[in-house]
Image 1 (cartoon, rainbow, N blue to C red):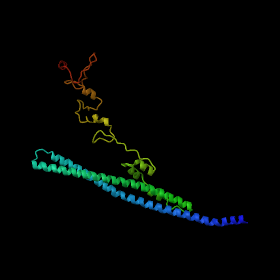
Image 2 (spheres, rainbow, N blue to C red):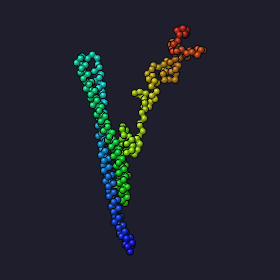
Image 3 (cartoon, helix red, strand yellow):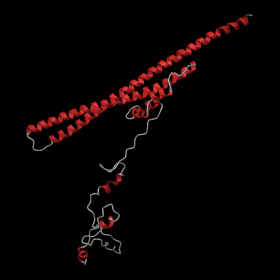
Image 4 (cartoon, rainbow, N blue to C red):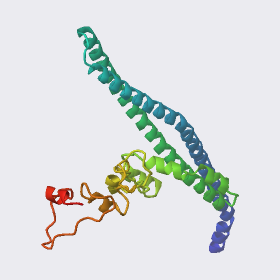
Length: 272
């Protein structure tokens, strides 16, 4: 009878245990939801800070550029010849002031750029944490037997975008740490395409500089340019020769003159 009583006592405890577990699951789900909501708001706040940080960094860069131009103008004025001693002193003082302003603008630009980098990293990390927290809140709700509090659309809206992730990695000094925290590898660096000079089309081969530098050369007797297939013939015509006349035949010895234009005077005078 004692054993039967024990079994009955255990059966009477089952509803209480189930209720305890249900309450535990409810509290866990609620805690997860509150944590996810806090993460979501933090991600929104971090994103809201980005525009101001970008404006400040852009303004600091413009001020640095203006300061660089001011230094160049002041240096040019200081090096201007024919100044009186008073003018030379004033231009020298102006140059020193401009260089001091440039130093300050450079430091301000550096600080603004670092502030922007920190804001971009914070935004990416906050969005990633919010995404994970919202996923955990949904899983806890399912364990409780309730509907998930966040739709997939809501999660997609808060998770970090590709641009935010790229900005977080670009210029940072802690790529390894971000790689671990964000769970992804940094994007590959952008390829830099060299050009042959200012004004040339992007992607032009860099070794084409020599060819492009001859585009203003005078044309040959028949309008050839140095890049035409007939250039070799044009460049190797001897002085005084009739335009279009083939060059003299190569001597049987195989020796070539050191200069294409070096022709003995006797040879030039013998031309009919």
